[in-house]
Amino acid sequence: MKLVALLSSLLLAAGAQAAPTLVGDTVDAGMYRTVDTGRGIGRIGGFGLEAPFVVQAGTADLQQYSVAYSLNVEGDKFLIDFLHPSQWGVGIVFRLSGLDFSPAGGHLSSLTVDSNLSGYTLNVGKDYVEIGLAGVKGTADSYFTGSFDVSAVPEPSSWAMLALGLGALGAAARRQKRKAGAV
Image 1 (tube, helix red, strand yellow):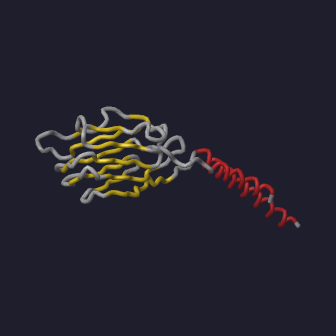
Image 2 (spheres, helix red, strand yellow; image 1 turned 90 degrees about the vertical axis):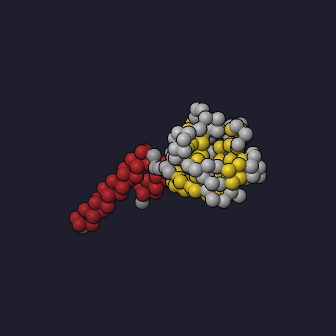
Image 3 (cartoon, helix red, strand yellow; image 1 turned 180 degrees about the vertical axis):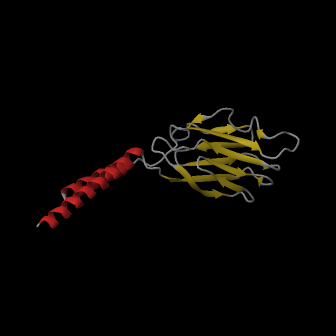
């Protein structure tokens, strides 16, 4: 029984991880054309970062992009604040990518949204969020907040501890069985 208690406490300690966060991670943000309307397909210059950035705590990484919007990425959410009335064209998407939630690890499983925009589409992958803005009309008061829901990925050491613990439990059970059979 002492062995079982020790293994349980080791497994709990190995499984206890910090909450997944983007603070310290390098992410990328930008507006893209996904449909060629005579202006090409790909990243739109001037409406997003030209290079990835490191997420910081608080408003230290609050950025304004052109006259269109500001973006603040936090450890567990992001906020897009639209600054002027706008209407987005066909095939325009906002993409936030590189969301790996290290060092704790994890995959983006879903996004909880709070927004006063209507008509947008949402595509969430393991490490990106894409907001389709085609035809969306915004005002100077429009906003979009997304809170990340992350599925934790167990560390390799947790798997090793689990395997070791199960092996020890199996060995203890075999010894008990042999003792019972010898009597």
